[in-house]
Length: 189
Image (cartoon, rainbow, N blue to C red):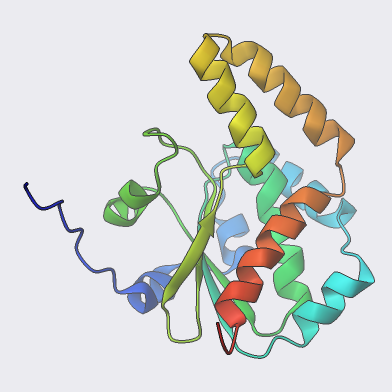
């Protein structure tokens, strides 16, 4: 039997170091209108006290590489969540890259074979990949996959939009991201 292809090793620290901080990323936004939407989402979002407490006391640093571009609606919804978490957690550092900045990295994180952003890659304090998230919560990804399977993606997107409207505080996103923060910051298995 043939051996599977082996992907080249990624120098995650170099990728992280090449990225922009949230404020620099926002300043470089292609669309002032989209930047305003991101800032509006960010201002409206608050984290609950238990989440803030956990983030404030992370046992080890966590690095996140965010593949994100301001034109994308899911980026507008979810990048502010990650930023709020980084603001609450001094050991949670995020850097933003574009798909084209590191195409070899982005190619590893396709969604069902397609290009979709954002993608948040969680790294330990030693820049070891520990997990990834995106472009939307698991429940929403499942709806889109079901829509593709039955040939009605438009109906699936309407259901996803309804879920987003029901969860304006992004509790589902926060819970999924916190699980990855917990993994990346863990001291033991």
